[in-house]
Every structure is written in C-alpha cells, then in structure tokens.
Length: 384
Image 1 (cartoon, helix red, strand yellow):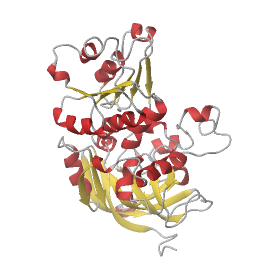
Image 2 (cartoon, helix red, strand yellow):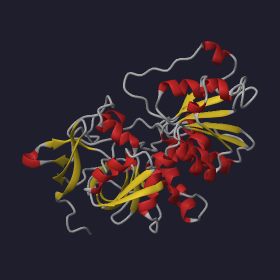
Image 3 (cartoon, helix red, strand yellow):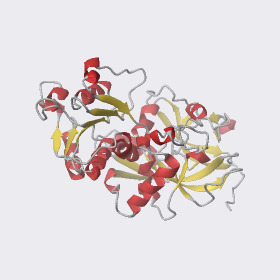
Image 4 (cartoon, one colour):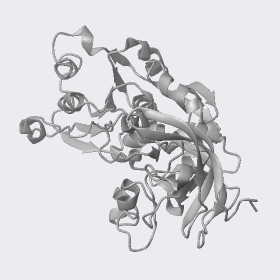
C-alpha cells in the first residue's frame, strides 16, 4: 500500500499560467475520490495538441491548468468503487474514456461498435474538472488548478477517472508505450478503424509529423499498394519511405494546387484514401479533392484552430467522395489500447523510430517544447 494513500501529495508540475506561459511549480495533488485513480506519471510524450492549447488556440483551454495527455503511468492509489485497476498497475491514461456501461450506446453494440466517443464525462472533462465538478490540483495558498483532457500528465502525479485508464501489461516499457496515448494510435486507427482500408489501396497522407507517419505505417501494414507522402519539408521524406511511402511529393515543387497534381497528373482519377494530418483547413480541402472519383474517402485527423471552417464544392461529394473524421483513431481506450501495447511487445508494431528527443524531469517539458518547434522532432519523451 502506498504510504501516501488517502493523503495529499506535493510534487512538481508544469503549470500553464496563460498563453505561452508554462512554469515549473510545486503543486498539491489530492487523493482520488470515488471512481477515480491517482497516478504516478512515468513518461510523457509531448503532443502538438498540448502546444496548440498552450498557444491559446483551443477554445476549451483554461488557465491555470496542467496540460499533457500522452503518457505512461503507474497506479499510486484508487478511490472507492474502483475495480478495473489497482495499486502498482501500469496504465495509459486516455483522453477518450470508455465507460462500458450496458446502457451506453456509444460503448456497446449495435451502434457502439461504430465509435469510441463515449460522452460519459465529456462535459466535466471539457471544463477542466473531475466528474464531480472539482479539481484535484491546488497551487500555493490553495489556488485551484484545472485539469486538461482528463489526463494532466505534465505532473509527477495526477488524478484521472477510472474509465480513462487503459491497464496494460506489467512488463510494458512506459517510456515508449506512452506514444499510444494519442498521436501514433490516432494515425494507425484512422487507417485501420475509421477508413478500414483494403490491401492494394492507394493512400495519400498530408503532413509528415508523427501522426502522418503513423498513417503511412498503418497503410503499409494493411497492404496499401501506393502511398503518397506529402509535405513541404523534404527532410521528412526519408522516414516516410522507410515506413512504406512509395511517392514523396512537395507541393512547393508545383505551380498548381496539389490536388490537381495528385488527381489528374500522378493518378488518373485520384486516390482511394486520403488523410489530413496538418490541421490546416486548406489542406483538408486539398485532401478531399485528391480523393478518387466515385468512391474516394478523405479523413480529417488534424485539429484546426478555433473558428476555422472547411469548404469544398458540393460537386466533389455528389461525384462519390466521402469526408470523414476521427478522434483517437476510433480506438476504444480501455479495451483496444492494451492489445496495441502487446503488439509492440511482440515486435509486431514498431514505435521506437518516433522518439527523436528525450529529456529528464518535469523541467524537461520546457526543453521538449523547444524541440517540438525545431522542425526535426517527431516525439519528445520526458521521463520523470
């Protein structure tokens, strides 16, 4: 039993005080209440969504708060009624919960098999608080600090809802498997779950960060015949090729819209499946208009800035294209993340190539942010 079970814990955290204002501070983490779990964070992989919120682009972003949502952790203690995890278990905290309650149409068949978007705690999670409407974090003088995406892993300790904890193999290397808490799982799932591509398909990926590269990896594993990797930074092409890209395309090399190049020059009728991993609404349009006439499907993965809207001519849809989107790649967190960890441990799923930078301690979060802005970083992992 943890010596601090039932007691507040003082620890270090990276607290977002305001736009682009991240400070290393001592905070107090309260014990978990009923249905909650307190975690000792082991490793945190920095995701662009964290930066997007820190930069003030997220309409739901609140300050002061503790960001972070792509991590691996160990259960320190559990609240009343928690049965699915226990002290000492390794978990991946997931921003998309899975309540699994029989009456939840989002978790259970027949409709539940179509989505992972369980809304059980969506309202409170979006408000930066736990399901009972309060926070487990306090700063100096008892000041309330908000939660983020139901995870808040930029802290040595955090509290999450039980239904946000994916219990994984006790031998799982959390340093690497933290990547499955968001970005890499999202890209793989967009291919395998959301679009469910067939072997022999053609695929185009716009944006070659970790998410876009994981789309390429997933498409190659599914047996795609032709994979277009599209980015204005040709320095990313070597990795794309290693993961399965057959064609690397830089839009800056052409004097016409890239969709006209892909649909008309490099292919006759377009590409079976296209994926936007940029968050840029103009690129989302280009991806849709690059899709194959009659049956092409385009998936929005990237998160656009607040207030942005997408557009295209209705004729693009009338002529058979489909526009869809994905959150966490359609993976149900508690039941479908653990098998991904097993695949990694069985050497059936490669992850190590995504980790390009590594740092130590909560203070390393500041260095990780700098690395992510450098242009040559896929994932920076901070180990506490």
